[in-house]
Image 1: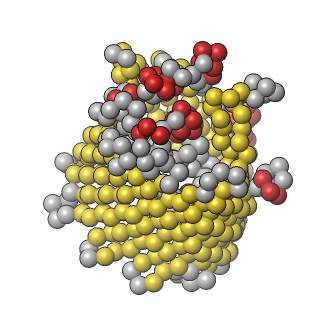
Image 2: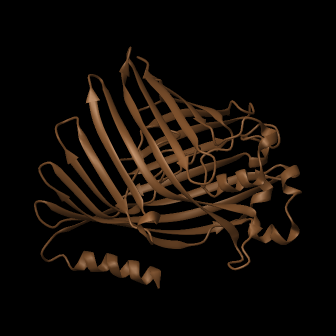
Image 3: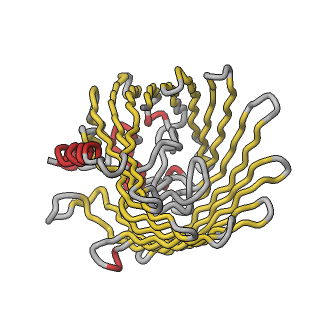
Length: 394
C-alpha cells in the first residue's frame, strides 16, 4: 500500500502540471558491500532509485519532494553477536538471540516533501525536510537529529518532519526556529539557533529540546515483547565556529546535553584542513564524547547495540579522524581515511577511490580494514570489508 501511495504521488505531480512546471531529477545507485566474518566473505547488494520533484508555485512559494525506493540482494540478515567480542556474546541468553538480527528489507519511502516560502528577510519551510546543524565532517555534536556513518560521512541523511522559520537581518546574521510535532508538546522537537559572523569567522549558538529514546537490549517488555524502552528528554545547548587561520581552515563544535534521567554529557569536536600547492588535501578532526567509555573493559552489550541502532554516536570517549585526498587525473581521485580510538588504541583504515566516469556517472570504492584487538572500538570483530557504489544522475 505504501509503495502504491508513493507512486501515485509521483504520477500526480508529473501529470498534473498544466499550471506549474514540475522539474524531475534524481539518480540510480547500485552498491555492492562485502564483509569478512568468521573466515567467510559475505555480500550484500542494493539497488536504489531516488526521484526528485521540484515546482515553483509562484514567485515566493516552491514545492520539493523526493522518493527513495531500494531493494536488497544477497545476505540480508546480519547477526549482531558476530560483530562483538566472544566474551560479550557469551552473556546473551539463548532465547534472545533471534532479536539481535539486523534485516535489510526492500522499501519505498517519501524521504522529503515540503513547501517553502521565501520572502525578503523570512524563509519558511513546512513538511519533511533536511535538518543537519553543524559543520564537522565525521561527527556533529550539535546535531541531535542524525548520526553519520564513519565510513561514509557525507552520505545523504533522511528527512525530518518540521516547521522551520529563518529570519535574516543582514548578510551574516540570522535566527532560526524549528518545531517538530510529537504526540504532546513535551514530546515535540524544538530548536532555536542564531548565526553570525565576525571577520573571517562564522559562528552559531543552538538550543535544542528533543525526546531521546534508548533501549535496554537485554530486557524484554512483557507487553510489547520488544526491548524495554527508556524515555528520555534531552536539552542540548551548544554551538560551532569556523573560519580561516594561517591559511588553514579551522572549525569547532561543542554541545552540552542535559538529560532528565540518565547522566548528562558533553561532546566536543575540533578540526582543521589544508590544501597543499601540489593539490593534496588533508583534514583531521578530534572528537570527545563523555557518554563514551575510557576503557575497553567498560564497554557493555548495551553500548554496542545502541551504537549499531544509532541511539548513540560513540562507544569510546576520544577519537581522531584523518582524511587525505589526491587528484590523479581530472576524473580520478584517490584518498585515505584513518579513524582511531584514543581510548582503547584501536584503529580502522579506509583507502578510497573516486572516479568520475562521465558528467553524470560516478564510481566510489573503498576498503575498510580493522586490525584492532578483540572487543575494541575498531576491532577485527567488525570484519574487514569493501564497498563499490556506482551512481548515475538524471
